[in-house]
Length: 96
Image 1 (cartoon, rainbow, N blue to C red):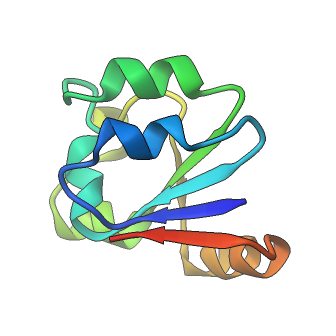
Image 2 (cartoon, rainbow, N blue to C red):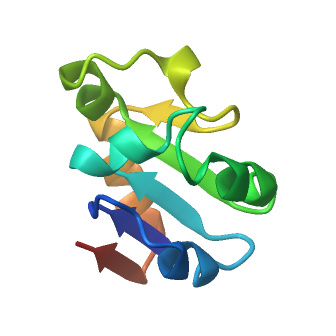
């Protein structure tokens, strides 16, 4: 399943619904919550490995965030990769 998270702040209940093997993309203001010193950084760090976490490069650039400020293991992707993930995952859940 592909999870598109737009919500900020990100509720822990959302992260609890993510299963092993799922792909999660943080978009828009949700990217502000995935910084290394963020409130959910420990939860994300525990799930990385079983779950693929991504962030859209445009969304972090617009907010002045550089990739090394993110929780380690979160992939920075571009629009082409976003489209590829949406095509390859028939079930998509949006969290707004």
